[in-house]
Length: 359
Ligand SMILES: *Cc1c(COP(=O)(O)O)cnc(C)c1O
Image 1: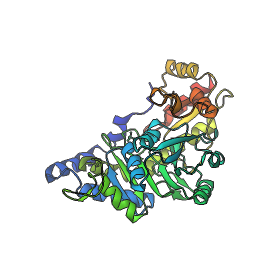
Image 2: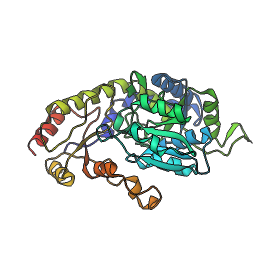
Image 3: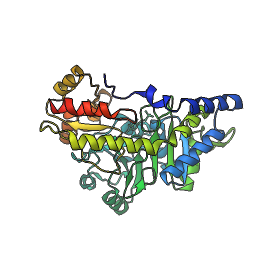
Image 4: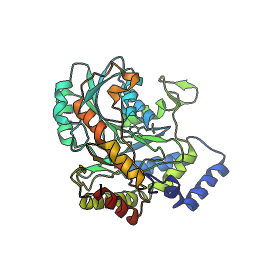
């Protein structure tokens, strides 16, 4: 069986280093907001090319904290792609803001900049761009629209650690960004974790307080905040794994390139190759998606669907997000994710290609 993602194998590569760093935390007797968090956040900010990073509890909170720091609330409108993972949209709703969906470009799966302007009202405050599947959004036109209408740019970089656009890394492409370190992400910890990055000192300080009950100084509360901290054990694990992230992303690109050059089947639509993409997900499209998924399963290949139900069709959002997003629906109907990871072997990738070409 070729697994979609083998988390055990991914972390086992660093077993010794991870064990040592966890032991160090245990021995220190200090478990929250300590040296490990500081060190990892410094290194992660550097990695992104951003001035600041704040460790938080998960990716959803990272996005929420970004919106809270910008001060948006009370029905402020935030534009967001209609085919994103639900968390991007939940973050907006949980801040009491209104998610306004914009259809994606069917070739990149990222927000279609040409459709943004038509959705702007006098309540629009920001565009939440999502670097979906690991490909950074083309920011050139988005930045122009944002400037014209005085909108902030929030990045959902949960799937795109290390991806870049014109050489600038995610986490440094907008005003503020949220990352997730959920175990299956390109940089993942051993539980939940996340980070906010920004170049803006004021936003940085505000997020630091907001994730800690809205407090800079113990028992003095400036803001109505959250308890959303990255714990020392997760920070230590992430600091180990960050050193290998560039190599892991290179390997993902190698597999993606191999798939793109060798999968030859007219029934399967492949993504474009882009060497700034980090291929968190290698998604193909096909007319009879469920049939292809079953065929692959029968041939020992595990695949997943990112995502089976579009946000506007989720029960919790019924009648709230609008009901006509044909491009998004087409993507949700036909998309299928092939196995890709830093630990898939070349032989396994060859097998995936062979099975797909025989379909
Ligand atoms: C994983 C993910 C999130 C949420 O991150 P969590 O750490 O699971 O809360 C947000 N947005 C996108 C696009 C994601 O893939």
